[in-house]
Image (cartoon, rainbow, N blue to C red; front, side, top):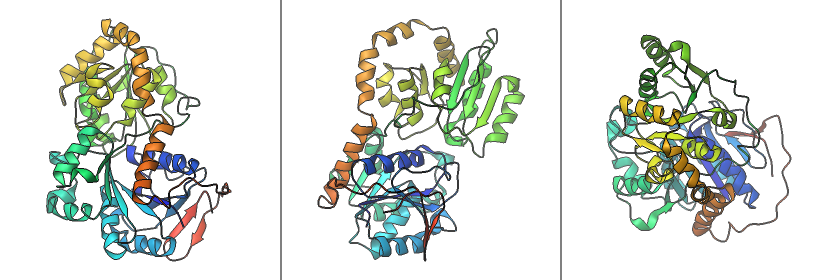
Length: 397
């Protein structure tokens, strides 16, 4: 019987999914029995293994049609609490609570939810916020990864402040100790990281890059995968910079790329936190980010630890990138702020975030979430088949 089930819709390479894998291991290390429950086992993280927690694959046809398999999981495993991360998982958990109200769930938000225009989730465009307001009201707690997002979620779903919990995302344990190899570049390297989707607005980053002086042969590398790949390639070609723009795909560990980069650029239209900005700060890489909702301004302390530019403004982004590449006086100020930056980053250390997340879970079921001595599970390379709803990988109890 797991203490906590972390529910995600898929193994896509988004920030929430990466955090779910990391949190599963961090909470296991604190003595909790953890299931990572995946509705559809597809995406770039599908083959990532877990050291300790079980990975339970529901085997649903789509993310939104996972309810029957999820209910079977609840009946069989009886988790102490479910943490639903990403909107489709929140719908599944909310509907599941109708049939199993005795199993509490926590809605965990990782992305802005309002005023997203064409980037808004189709379900909200069609049905508004009414269904989610009703389902989130059934949650025991609602978690957000930044203060701005917490405020927005509270207002969007008409939730009492007593339900809201703020816990940021953790830096991946050991992320900067071993890394994938990043090829050397001839000139300055500008790095972007994220799924190739409209929300990340890499089109504005490419436009800004095209405005930079090419004398020093700057290069732009965007790490990530997604449906915008062909459109972004075409844009780079149309702007005459295709030979200096590379999109090598999803990279599991971005540390060596961040260390090699002259500057990290975030061009997003919206976020909830921005794990990539946090990782860039931890790697000591200068950061230029859009002042979007939510997360970048909080992580950069209003501009103290990096530059903030307006959303969608290629010229402002280009100017900030040029200043960073020229190592403007701001770089010296950043060096003087190193002690403050280290203290700022300490709150996102894996152990610190795991303790806060554990405390949130314990506040829902304190009797079942006390750290306990449990056997270290043996890892399995082959799936263990579970009747009726799931395949279980990497770990057993």
